[in-house]
Length: 161
Image (cartoon, rainbow, N blue to C red; front, side, top):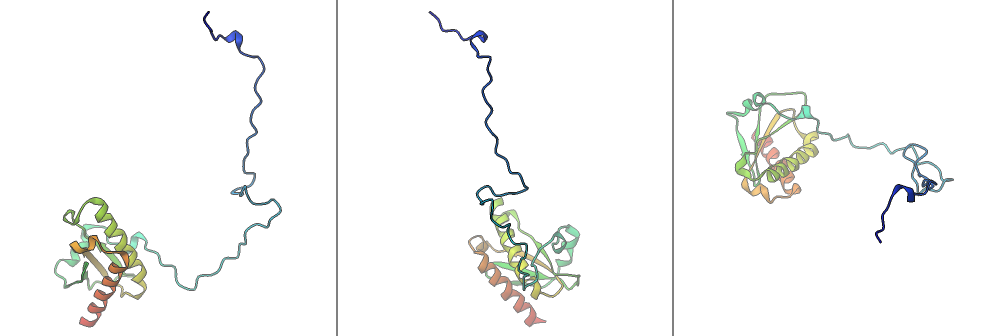
């Protein structure tokens, strides 16, 4: 005898729905006891200025890079720094990383580390445009080494002025 499953064997009673748990207030934490106080809205005011690196602090277009064609550059252990004499309203960074440097993930890593180093040093910089190119040794360099190299090159540039 064959077991067949047919609509006639389905129960007419509906199964009870599971109770859905949801957050009643926006972003309410489920493990917090109901009688606890909400988090404090008093946040400490930072003592240092906010270090940001918006797009208007970057050199993005080919015309912006043309000013570096015949400028003096300074070579360090990991990077080559070229500075323009054109003043702007803030220090600007341009990165030129060719495919000779390595694969895309290596180029992106270098650019990310260099942008971070520049972001941390930008408060001390004169309002010029800076072009940074990597050397082959920069592939294995950590962010602190690149930051130290950048600050030493900037110090050498100040001495030459």
